[in-house]
Image (tube, rainbow, N blue to C red; front, side, top):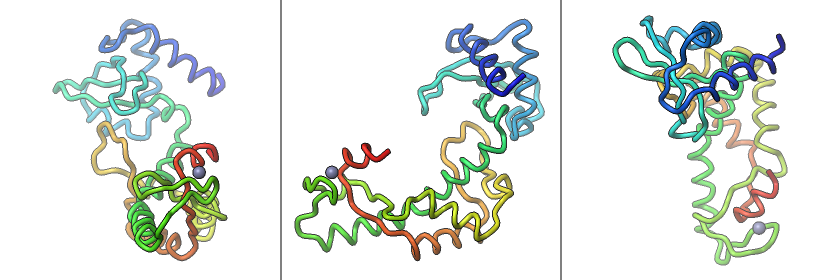
Length: 206
Ligand SMILES: [Zn+2]
């Protein structure tokens, strides 16, 4: 089976059930097969017996699978992560890298708006304010900067860098390796250039 077929299989099972409904019959064995491939299988199940149900994720508003453990505690798990494990580690690292520089971005915005009398979007020249603007990485894109950093530091083992402390219903990501994290923050401060855009122009670039 190709990865696409695996994804489709999970989607078909998911769509058979209503929110809050426990999966039954052969679906249990199929979903357990995928769950065992999850990188956080041990943490997700907590070594307990579990039941799987379908629900809507309160944060992402998407429908997916959840576990209810023997002790009644619950957690979500993404079947995409069971099927594309390595890719997700890198995606988490990217999320963590974004979170790490959030303070730097805010500081840059504060300085910019403090020093500029009539700030306008550099593309459409509409007036902007600190709360109604976006700091865009330009001319070097954020992704390019981060990829250069990853290459220069020969980072390959993303798994070890982003393991969260709390395994349940994780939404944000943090780079947990302090050395790498601060190296990245410093690298970003040194090389990143930002321009201020209005939210509309920023969306248009995406
Ligand atoms: Zn604009």
